[in-house]
Length: 273
Length: 235
Image (cartoon, rainbow over all chains, first blue to last red; front, side):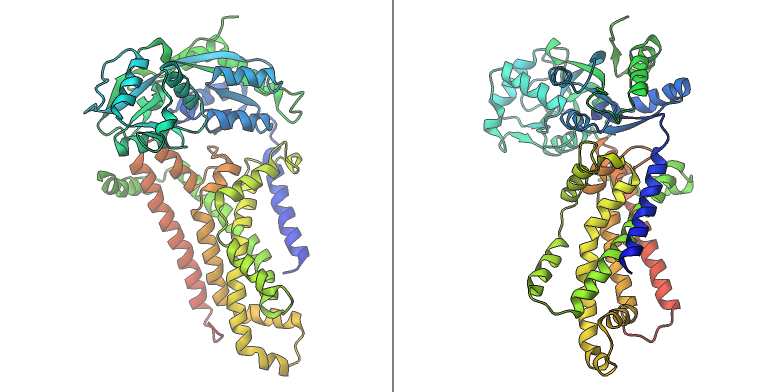
């Protein structure tokens, strides 16, 4: 019960942890949630591991938090979907090269009763205007994630400031995509979500896709290895191997082959080298 | 509401099929939270015992602070530990972020005040009862503390269980410093949060049921220990 035993115990704990970290062919990906929650990594990572022997660990958080974590050097690769923020990340010197990886699209889901009557609309701005006009209820991520940034941009293009109705018909959950879907479905509000998360989501209840197909709903994912000049501790070689594999024909094919109930979730579009 | 009935069958199925991933998650939960409870005991019990027997200026204020720290929000603890252990933080060179050790550190900080504050109360009451006897035996402060810790050991076990309960049930701290990485830092509570966010409510609830069973198991084990120790001492 003296200081020595306390330090002894801490030292044992620390030795144990550094031992576990010694395996150098491990990289950490700071990722957006949709790629993890939809099961894409469970499909890709075993293939990558078989090819290269590199173990990939994934921390799945919102795009905003993923970028901040990577800026703190707490990751080797950044895989998110907010092109402007990603380019700012590279411009600030935190990453070396951003590559387009794949895309899918955003959809607006709502209750089957469709109180704002937007079902089947292909013009997302008109649909948002209608939701705002009828006060139909809209649950926003409100967490600076890629989806949230996209949603705010769409409102701005529609000339609406939804935050003035915050707490009224516009509800900012400040949570991840899944938690926001759970909340939105719980209160009968419309939610904008990426299609991959929606297809793999298990608590749809009576919700269906109401708006889809507008070009403005395009959702581009990018991959960026961190800059080893900023983050000397990063496992940069393995990080580059991972990014190169994802954008290679083999990686792109693996992305295209991931399906749930026969539906393709992500569409590879890395530039062909 | 069909989720609740479904949760029971999912939980039974997980246990019956001996799901390997589940087993790994349960073991890590126990490893992290039991380690944190042990470390928090090593830190918290001496502090609690000292404050219980010592009289010094500012003691009243210290008691208020100790008791208030029992309400430390897990997310805040997680954030503080993250800032220290992040590669860009002062302890970043240790490379501990996103490891079980980081989770143990966060939970230790979270529950050490609980163990210190509760053991202080237990030992102070005990001390009031024994104070005259200790004086007549001319015990030093060190001897007094050791005698109190020994005599109060069964009550202190309950204090430890309170700490363990808090640790094993929290999600805010471990999800930030552990990152909920599959096969590395995923524990019961972060798995529950993940399945909830995937909309797999029945599975999330099933994991919650199993977490309850685990807590029950740990408490039953301690209870057995107590009973079999056939104590005569103060309870």
